[in-house]
Amino acid sequence: MNARAMEALAMTAGAVALRDLTVSYRGHPAVHHLSGEFRPGALTAVVGPNGAGKSTLLGALGGAIRRFEGRIERDPALRVAYLPQASELDRSFPVRVHEVVATGLWSSIGSFGAVGAAGRARIDGALAAVGLMGFERRLLGELSAGQAQRVLFARVLVQDAGLILLDEPFNAIDARTTADLLALLQRWKSEARTVVAVLHDLDQVRAHFEEVLLLARERVAWGPTAEVLRAEHLFRARQMAEAWDEKAPRCDTADGGAASPGAAR
Image (cartoon, rainbow, N blue to C red):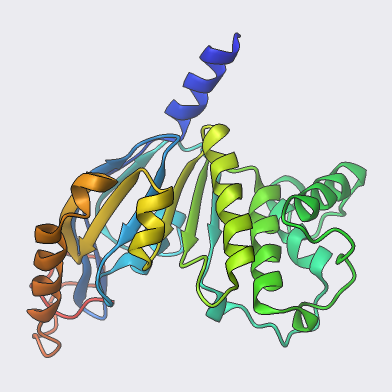
Protein backbone atom coordinates (compact mmCIF):
# COMPACT_ATOMS: atom_id res chain seq x y z
CA MET A 1 0.00 0.00 0.00
CA ASN A 2 1.47 3.38 -0.98
CA ALA A 3 1.71 6.37 1.39
CA ARG A 4 -1.34 8.13 -0.05
CA ALA A 5 -3.50 5.02 0.33
CA MET A 6 -2.30 4.52 3.92
CA GLU A 7 -3.14 8.14 4.78
CA ALA A 8 -6.59 7.80 3.23
CA LEU A 9 -7.21 4.62 5.21
CA ALA A 10 -6.11 6.29 8.45
CA MET A 11 -8.37 9.28 7.83
CA THR A 12 -11.38 7.09 7.10
CA ALA A 13 -10.78 5.10 10.26
CA GLY A 14 -10.73 8.34 12.26
CA ALA A 15 -14.15 9.51 11.07
CA VAL A 16 -16.70 10.22 13.83
CA ALA A 17 -20.32 11.23 13.23
CA LEU A 18 -23.05 12.27 15.66
CA ARG A 19 -26.68 11.53 14.79
CA ASP A 20 -29.28 13.37 16.87
CA LEU A 21 -27.18 12.90 20.02
CA THR A 22 -28.83 13.82 23.33
CA VAL A 23 -26.99 13.35 26.62
CA SER A 24 -28.77 14.17 29.88
CA TYR A 25 -27.41 15.04 33.30
CA ARG A 26 -29.71 14.66 36.32
CA GLY A 27 -32.73 14.69 34.06
CA HIS A 28 -31.73 17.79 32.06
CA PRO A 29 -30.23 17.81 28.56
CA ALA A 30 -26.54 18.71 28.66
CA VAL A 31 -26.16 18.01 24.92
CA HIS A 32 -29.38 18.25 22.94
CA HIS A 33 -30.13 16.79 19.47
CA LEU A 34 -26.58 17.28 18.17
CA SER A 35 -25.76 16.09 14.66
CA GLY A 36 -22.63 16.54 12.58
CA GLU A 37 -19.27 15.03 11.72
CA PHE A 38 -15.75 15.54 12.99
CA ARG A 39 -13.61 15.74 9.89
CA PRO A 40 -11.09 12.88 9.98
CA GLY A 41 -7.49 13.94 10.40
CA ALA A 42 -8.49 17.47 11.45
CA LEU A 43 -7.94 19.58 14.56
CA THR A 44 -11.41 20.52 15.85
CA ALA A 45 -12.04 22.85 18.79
CA VAL A 46 -15.25 22.61 20.82
CA VAL A 47 -16.11 26.03 22.24
CA GLY A 48 -19.08 27.65 23.93
CA PRO A 49 -20.28 29.32 27.13
CA ASN A 50 -19.78 27.78 30.55
CA GLY A 51 -22.25 24.94 31.03
CA ALA A 52 -22.65 24.42 27.30
CA GLY A 53 -22.16 20.65 27.51
CA LYS A 54 -18.63 20.59 26.07
CA SER A 55 -17.10 18.21 28.63
CA THR A 56 -20.22 16.07 28.57
CA LEU A 57 -19.83 15.68 24.82
CA LEU A 58 -16.22 14.53 25.22
CA GLY A 59 -17.32 12.07 27.89
CA ALA A 60 -19.81 10.52 25.48
CA LEU A 61 -17.28 10.43 22.64
CA GLY A 62 -14.70 8.76 24.88
CA GLY A 63 -17.08 6.19 26.34
CA ALA A 64 -17.07 7.52 29.91
CA ILE A 65 -20.77 8.40 29.47
CA ARG A 66 -22.65 5.43 28.04
CA ARG A 67 -26.29 6.43 28.43
CA PHE A 68 -27.55 8.70 25.68
CA GLU A 69 -30.05 8.90 22.85
CA GLY A 70 -29.09 9.10 19.21
CA ARG A 71 -25.93 7.59 17.77
CA ILE A 72 -22.18 8.06 17.79
CA GLU A 73 -20.87 6.44 14.62
CA ARG A 74 -17.23 5.40 14.29
CA ASP A 75 -15.17 2.38 13.37
CA PRO A 76 -15.35 -0.03 16.36
CA ALA A 77 -11.64 -0.70 15.92
CA LEU A 78 -10.77 2.98 16.28
CA ARG A 79 -8.54 3.58 19.30
CA VAL A 80 -9.59 6.53 21.46
CA ALA A 81 -7.36 8.50 23.84
CA TYR A 82 -8.91 10.88 26.37
CA LEU A 83 -7.09 13.59 28.32
CA PRO A 84 -9.28 14.89 31.19
CA GLN A 85 -9.17 18.31 32.77
CA ALA A 86 -6.08 18.85 34.93
CA SER A 87 -8.32 19.43 37.96
CA GLU A 88 -9.37 15.76 37.80
CA LEU A 89 -5.78 14.60 38.37
CA ASP A 90 -4.90 13.78 41.98
CA ARG A 91 -1.27 14.83 42.15
CA SER A 92 -1.03 13.91 45.84
CA PHE A 93 -1.19 10.21 45.01
CA PRO A 94 2.33 8.68 45.30
CA VAL A 95 2.81 7.59 41.71
CA ARG A 96 5.84 8.09 39.51
CA VAL A 97 5.92 9.67 36.08
CA HIS A 98 6.75 6.47 34.20
CA GLU A 99 3.89 4.68 35.97
CA VAL A 100 1.37 7.30 34.85
CA VAL A 101 2.55 7.13 31.26
CA ALA A 102 2.54 3.32 31.36
CA THR A 103 -1.22 3.33 32.00
CA GLY A 104 -1.56 4.36 28.37
CA LEU A 105 -0.39 0.86 27.40
CA TRP A 106 -3.30 -0.95 29.06
CA SER A 107 -5.03 -1.77 25.75
CA SER A 108 -2.01 -3.80 24.63
CA ILE A 109 -0.75 -5.29 27.94
CA GLY A 110 -3.92 -5.41 30.05
CA SER A 111 -4.48 -4.03 33.54
CA PHE A 112 -1.91 -6.30 35.19
CA GLY A 113 0.50 -7.04 32.36
CA ALA A 114 4.21 -6.29 32.60
CA VAL A 115 5.72 -3.49 30.59
CA GLY A 116 8.33 -5.11 28.35
CA ALA A 117 11.24 -3.63 26.46
CA ALA A 118 9.00 -2.38 23.62
CA GLY A 119 6.66 -0.71 26.11
CA ARG A 120 9.54 0.95 27.94
CA ALA A 121 10.84 2.26 24.62
CA ARG A 122 7.42 3.76 23.85
CA ILE A 123 7.33 5.42 27.27
CA ASP A 124 10.84 6.83 26.83
CA GLY A 125 9.96 8.12 23.37
CA ALA A 126 6.77 9.78 24.62
CA LEU A 127 8.58 11.48 27.51
CA ALA A 128 11.25 12.72 25.13
CA ALA A 129 8.57 14.08 22.79
CA VAL A 130 7.03 16.19 25.59
CA GLY A 131 10.38 17.35 26.97
CA LEU A 132 10.48 15.19 30.11
CA MET A 133 13.33 12.77 29.43
CA GLY A 134 15.01 12.09 32.78
CA PHE A 135 11.80 12.63 34.77
CA GLU A 136 10.79 8.96 34.77
CA ARG A 137 11.34 8.39 38.51
CA ARG A 138 9.91 11.70 39.71
CA LEU A 139 6.73 11.63 41.75
CA LEU A 140 3.80 13.32 40.07
CA GLY A 141 3.36 15.59 43.09
CA GLU A 142 6.89 16.96 42.61
CA LEU A 143 6.07 18.40 39.21
CA SER A 144 4.79 21.82 38.23
CA ALA A 145 1.34 22.13 36.64
CA GLY A 146 2.92 22.40 33.21
CA GLN A 147 5.12 19.35 33.74
CA ALA A 148 2.16 17.32 34.99
CA GLN A 149 0.25 18.23 31.84
CA ARG A 150 3.20 17.09 29.74
CA VAL A 151 2.99 13.73 31.52
CA LEU A 152 -0.68 13.38 30.53
CA PHE A 153 0.18 14.20 26.93
CA ALA A 154 2.90 11.53 27.05
CA ARG A 155 0.28 9.02 28.21
CA VAL A 156 -1.87 9.98 25.20
CA LEU A 157 1.14 9.49 22.92
CA VAL A 158 1.76 5.91 23.99
CA GLN A 159 -1.90 5.05 23.37
CA ASP A 160 -1.29 5.52 19.63
CA ALA A 161 -4.95 6.47 19.11
CA GLY A 162 -6.71 7.54 15.93
CA LEU A 163 -9.16 9.73 17.89
CA ILE A 164 -7.70 12.04 20.55
CA LEU A 165 -10.00 13.90 22.96
CA LEU A 166 -8.57 16.77 25.02
CA ASP A 167 -10.60 18.54 27.73
CA GLU A 168 -9.24 22.04 28.35
CA PRO A 169 -5.65 20.86 27.81
CA PHE A 170 -3.95 24.27 28.15
CA ASN A 171 -5.61 25.65 31.29
CA ALA A 172 -3.32 26.98 34.03
CA ILE A 173 -0.06 26.08 32.29
CA ASP A 174 2.76 28.34 31.18
CA ALA A 175 3.16 29.76 27.67
CA ARG A 176 6.20 27.63 26.80
CA THR A 177 4.42 24.39 27.74
CA THR A 178 1.35 25.48 25.78
CA ALA A 179 3.47 26.17 22.69
CA ASP A 180 5.23 22.80 22.96
CA LEU A 181 1.94 20.91 23.33
CA LEU A 182 0.31 22.81 20.48
CA ALA A 183 3.23 21.65 18.32
CA LEU A 184 2.39 18.09 19.37
CA LEU A 185 -1.14 18.61 18.04
CA GLN A 186 0.34 19.56 14.68
CA ARG A 187 2.33 16.31 14.76
CA TRP A 188 -0.91 14.38 15.30
CA LYS A 189 -2.52 16.22 12.41
CA SER A 190 0.42 15.28 10.14
CA GLU A 191 -0.20 11.64 11.15
CA ALA A 192 -3.89 11.95 10.08
CA ARG A 193 -5.19 11.55 13.63
CA THR A 194 -8.51 13.17 14.54
CA VAL A 195 -8.16 15.62 17.45
CA VAL A 196 -11.14 17.12 19.30
CA ALA A 197 -10.29 19.66 22.05
CA VAL A 198 -12.47 21.66 24.43
CA LEU A 199 -11.02 25.18 24.59
CA HIS A 200 -11.88 28.65 25.87
CA ASP A 201 -9.17 30.85 24.30
CA LEU A 202 -10.69 31.89 20.95
CA ASP A 203 -7.45 33.54 19.78
CA GLN A 204 -5.71 30.21 20.33
CA VAL A 205 -8.47 28.44 18.43
CA ARG A 206 -8.19 30.85 15.48
CA ALA A 207 -4.43 30.38 15.33
CA HIS A 208 -4.21 26.60 15.60
CA PHE A 209 -7.53 24.87 14.82
CA GLU A 210 -9.08 24.50 11.40
CA GLU A 211 -12.54 23.37 12.48
CA VAL A 212 -14.82 24.51 15.31
CA LEU A 213 -17.99 23.21 16.92
CA LEU A 214 -19.72 26.10 18.73
CA LEU A 215 -21.94 24.47 21.32
CA ALA A 216 -24.59 25.96 23.59
CA ARG A 217 -26.18 22.70 24.64
CA GLU A 218 -27.37 22.60 21.04
CA ARG A 219 -25.33 23.10 17.90
CA VAL A 220 -24.90 26.80 17.11
CA ALA A 221 -22.43 26.39 14.25
CA TRP A 222 -19.97 23.74 13.06
CA GLY A 223 -17.40 24.06 10.29
CA PRO A 224 -14.29 26.03 9.28
CA THR A 225 -12.99 28.21 12.11
CA ALA A 226 -13.36 31.59 10.40
CA GLU A 227 -16.96 30.88 9.48
CA VAL A 228 -18.00 29.57 12.90
CA LEU A 229 -16.35 32.21 15.08
CA ARG A 230 -18.32 35.06 13.56
CA ALA A 231 -19.76 37.68 15.89
CA GLU A 232 -23.37 36.73 15.19
CA HIS A 233 -22.72 33.08 16.08
CA LEU A 234 -20.95 33.97 19.32
CA PHE A 235 -23.77 36.38 20.24
CA ARG A 236 -26.37 33.70 19.60
CA ALA A 237 -24.47 31.24 21.81
CA ARG A 238 -24.43 33.78 24.65
CA GLN A 239 -28.14 34.40 24.22
CA MET A 240 -28.88 30.68 24.37
CA ALA A 241 -26.78 30.32 27.52
CA GLU A 242 -28.56 33.20 29.24
CA ALA A 243 -31.96 31.69 28.35
CA TRP A 244 -31.26 28.37 30.10
CA ASP A 245 -33.65 27.70 32.97
CA GLU A 246 -31.75 26.23 35.91
CA LYS A 247 -35.08 25.44 37.62
CA ALA A 248 -36.72 23.71 34.67
CA PRO A 249 -38.76 20.62 35.64
CA ARG A 250 -36.83 17.38 35.75
CA CYS A 251 -37.33 15.26 32.65
CA ASP A 252 -39.63 12.28 33.24
CA THR A 253 -37.44 10.00 31.14
CA ALA A 254 -34.29 8.36 32.44
CA ASP A 255 -30.99 10.14 32.01
CA GLY A 256 -29.91 9.62 28.42
CA GLY A 257 -33.42 10.25 27.06
CA ALA A 258 -34.68 13.35 25.32
CA ALA A 259 -35.66 16.15 27.70
CA SER A 260 -37.17 19.58 27.73
CA PRO A 261 -34.68 22.50 27.90
CA GLY A 262 -33.07 22.88 31.30
CA ALA A 263 -29.71 23.14 32.94
CA ALA A 264 -26.61 22.08 31.02
CA ARG A 265 -23.38 20.77 32.39
